[in-house]
Image (cartoon, rainbow, N blue to C red; front, side):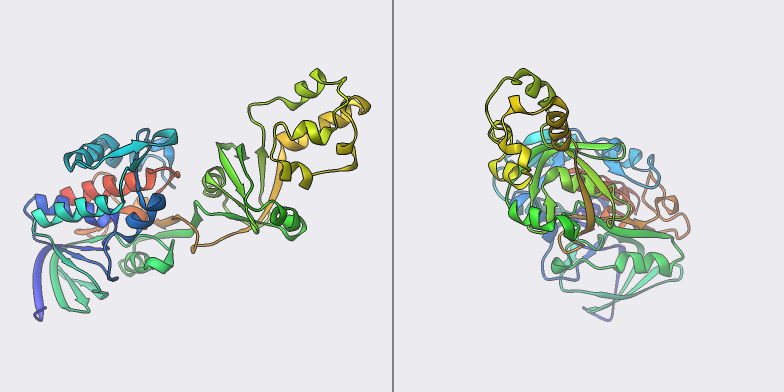
Amino acid sequence: MSSKLQYDVAVIGGGAAGLMAAAIAGKRGRRVVLIEHTAKIGEKIRISGGGRCNFTNLFASPKNYICHNKHFVKSALARYTQHDFIKLVESYDIAYHEKTLGQLFCDGSSKQIINMLLSECEKRQVDVRLNCSVTAIERNDRFVLTTAEGIIDTASVVIATGGLSIPQIGASDFGYKIARQFGIKVLATRPALVPLKVEASTLNMFTKLSGVSQDSLVSYGDMQFRENILFTHRGLSGPAILQISSYLEKFSGEEIIINLLPDVDLKKEFVSYKNSKQSVANFLKNYLPNRFVEAIMTNDFDRSITDLKNSILFDIAEGIHQFKVTISGSEGYQKAEVTIGGVDTDELSSKTMESQKIPGLFFIGEAVDVTGWLGGYNFQWAWSSGYVAGQYC
């Protein structure tokens, strides 16, 4: 790179949001440079969905997002919807399928989505720079970026550097540092969509259950999610647990309630079989994994249903429909799919993602205090926020 290059737009961060913003800005005829500090573009896209990329959700709407200002997401999601992104995917003949709950995945590989976005950038002559770290950003009438490859002079800067999740693929706090440098408020961050750890007193039981999965209804406060849970040697994971984790404001000491049989009324079942000589343990094994029944066994489980008072049977039922777990912590950013918190949306225009204080400075994607549910919602936020910033940067 020569000592100084001029562009209209510099997009910092080569993930989902950054690729979208660069392509859209380029489509408007803007001279765009896309700067990625690692050797690979779109790494989070590549590893998502088991390598098949859960690229959006058919049901994406503002209610699927956590944000300090719940109205902020409405404009971007309305102006670039999941159906718009699906059209783009179809225009590249990328085959896809719906899994559960509206989640769309590539039939082939997540690399198809990365290649599609790179192709969109290439068509618009976006200058993609890999292994290029930005060490400083200054602003006079334009922005001046000091990078590993020299000085970049640009009219607009789009920060698409993501959050703190999955540091092993290059996550950093760069976006937050830039926001603070320019006097833009950053809300406290924490891991989200993350496996949970349990307190030491129950750890032995969870270790024994490691690998057991069960369709459950998981509750915390007013929030409920119905999907599988997975017992692990340190606690709990699985889709329903990841979903509820985003709502835990502090992990230590929080209690979640799990209905392990949401489609069965165990009290009614016990009443129906009140004359059965079957043991409680064998009866429960018709509904629950054997290892789970064995892990929660008490002396009463060896007795027959007919020998036990209804009050005891109902207590057993209650313990399964309201299986209470005290959380001791999370698996942290290493295992978290996304980051809650980040650049305060009150500091940004919901229409353009531009800073209210610093004209020409935009924040998009996970760097912003917007967190989607599990199931393609975070990618949709990346596409939508990237699109609107690309229209105005």
